[in-house]
Each structure stands twice: as C-alpha cells, then as structure tokens.
Image (cartoon, rainbow, N blue to C red; front, top):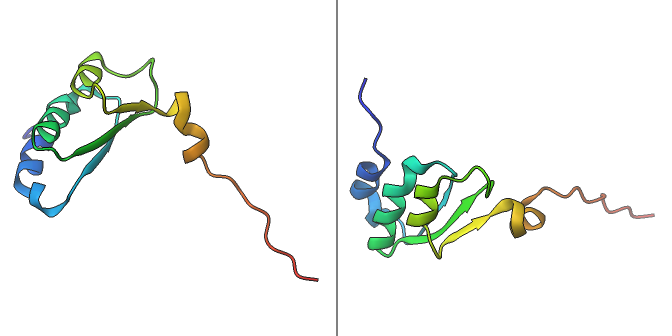
Length: 87
C-alpha cells in the first residue's frame, strides 16, 4: 500500500484555488501547511483542540492557527432558529 502524501496532491493542483483553510490537529499535515505558507496559499489552520494539537503542526502554522475551543466555537456551532410564524 502506498502512503498518501497530501503535499504532492497540493503541488499538482495549487493553481486551482486562491487560498486554503486546513482543519486538523494532526502533525502529518505540518509539511502541507509549510508548503502552503511558502506558496502564499495558506489562509488559516483551524484545530479542534489546543490540548490535542500536534506541536509540529503548531510550529508550522504559527501565526495562522486558531483553536475551536478558544474563540471559534460560537461562530461555528449550529444554532437552531425558530421558524417564522405568520398569524
């Protein structure tokens, strides 16, 4: 079985998009984040958890990373709105 390399796929298709947002806590994506930074294609890295975020990813995404548990949860979570009633 061949290992998946997200960076190689990105290198092939990086002209198809202006900016990228990566949602992960996995350090395996640190090389992709670094590549996107070098190509000026990285908009943001969003990590679900500060506690479970890889130190490699934090280092690669310095200045671009936000954590859902810190300040993004209210902006991202689903809020059910009541239907409009017309009498």
